[in-house]
Image 1 (tube, rainbow, N blue to C red):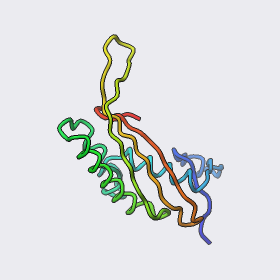
Image 2: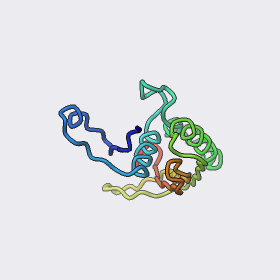
Image 3: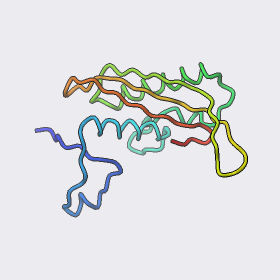
Image 4: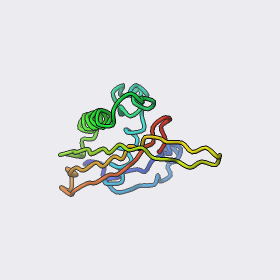
Length: 144
């Protein structure tokens, strides 16, 4: 019988090893946690899979790519990565919007950064339900 229990992030191994109960979540929340983990990991960071992660880190300080090229690069990378690593989903579609945004800091100077809006839609294989995930990042340096 397959395990139908899904754990929240961050994993708390000490709870599991000491016989305690780790916080659990729904399959959709588990998938969302995994997508966030993949989006915020750079290739080669996870020793269990050198290809786990996303290309967002590769373009973090890239000011030379046009918004359209940057968008296409991120869409292609995320679709390829998610199709490979997230087997609980099918029909994965990634939409990305790139825009400039002015950030107001605590100092007198404001900064303009590229904002990457990500919207992922798919179908959950186990339940055949629609799945939707939204996240955004600022580049240079990466923040979310």
